[in-house]
Image (cartoon, rainbow, N blue to C red):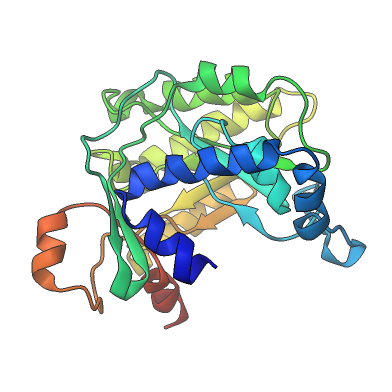
Length: 282
């Protein structure tokens, strides 16, 4: 059905618009009486064998929805009907920001990939906090992916991360520190050893002030050198955070079937999808 009907239909629209159309249609589908129970019966099957105990949290299953799909917490209650074990919201910043100019999301059909330069577009952490209040789908683990505003200098970045951390702490189960998006100028510089160590230590210090600290993960880029990766390992050990999320999108264009002229016309952005999976297997 997707290949022969839905895919051609959605490809009539620009990718970003297709995303919002899809979610609007999904919301309508779930509003049909009895549809919610049907979706849960199909996708929401829970079995003890699928459960995972990680970082002190119980995940209903090991399949989750990564950050970027639901930046503002508008859809996590809908997406829970698909049976995800966890859903990560964000990246969210202290203040709302519009992100980069459109178009900023591009399909690479021949590579089964996407290039995006969204630029941390989001409604701000206060809007996310409001949406997180109220009932949560039973058993759903929610992560908060936090970042800094584009106009915040790197030397003041820690204040942005701490602000988001404090505001989201009562509402999420774990945190992800995003310093690896290629679409916010200068952000990846925070992956350097000195600023990253300082940032994570401040977050951990704040975390340990709570009666029940929450897991903190670091989201890294796939374009790090071996030396940088070793620095990341040292930083994780020193700071005592719970682990890393590997990886964000890549700026590499190696091995793509998409014509070079098309890639040049698209311009900058992070590549995701099947090409990244292939690179990880090499």
